[in-house]
Amino acid sequence: METETRRLAKINGYSNEMKEQPNPVHQPKTEMRARTNKAPQPDSVPVLVNRHHPWTESAEDTDSRLAPVSAFPDIRALDSNIRLDRTCLQRLDALLDAVSGKNGIVVVSGYRDLAEQTEIYYSSLRENGAPYTAKFVALPGCSEHHTGLAVDVGSAAGGLDFIAPEFPDDGVCGAFKARAAEFGFVQRYKAHKEHLTGISCEPWHFRYVGAPHAAIMEERDLCLEEYVEILRQERAKAGHGEASHGN
Image (cartoon, rainbow, N blue to C red; front, side, top):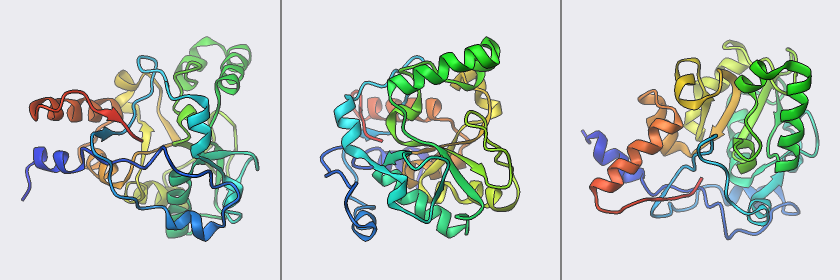
C-alpha cells in the first residue's frame, strides 16, 4: 500500500489545464467533452483563494477559460448567462448525469468578476447586515467565484436564494454530494472547518479541484487550506520549493 506521502507526490502536479486552451463558447458540446481529461501538468496544486490569498489571474486569462452553462442545454441554471471554467463545466455535466440530477438540481451561481462580487457584497451588507455577510459572502477579490472553478447549486424543489440556496443531504442533492469527489468536486466550506476557511458552512458551494485531489481531501477530511499546506510541505521535503497554482 502506498504511503500518504507517495500518494500526495503522485498527484502533486495535477492540473485542469486552466490556460492555453481555445475559448469553447461556440464549440459543439461533443468537442467540449473531448477535452476533459488532459494529462497532468507538473508543479501545480489547486489554487487557494480566500481573504489571505486573493485571486491574481488576469481578467483576460480567466475569461479565456470560461464557457456558458447554456452550452449544456440540459443543465438547469438560474441565469442563462452563468459561466464556468470549461473543465469544471464538463465534469459538472458528467456528475449531474451520473446522479440523474438535471431535473432536480439548478446551477445558481458560477463565475463572478470583481464588479459583480463587489455589488453582491455591499448589497448583502445593506440587506442582511455585517454578521451575515461576513459568514456567507467573500470579500471582493477574495472569492472562489472569481476563478470560474466554484459553482453554487440548489434544489429545484427548494428555495433558490442567490446567496444561500437550499441543498439538503437527501434525495438527488445527497447523491450529488456523495459522488462529487469522484468527478473532482469538494464541498468547499464545511461547518467544522470554519476556523480555517473563514466562511460558514455552505452545503451548496462546490469547488472543482480535480478527481485525484478531491479523493484525498475527502478521504482525509481536509479543507483546501489544509490540503494546499500539506502539498507545500511535501514539495519542500522533495526540494521543489513553492508550487505554481493550477486549478
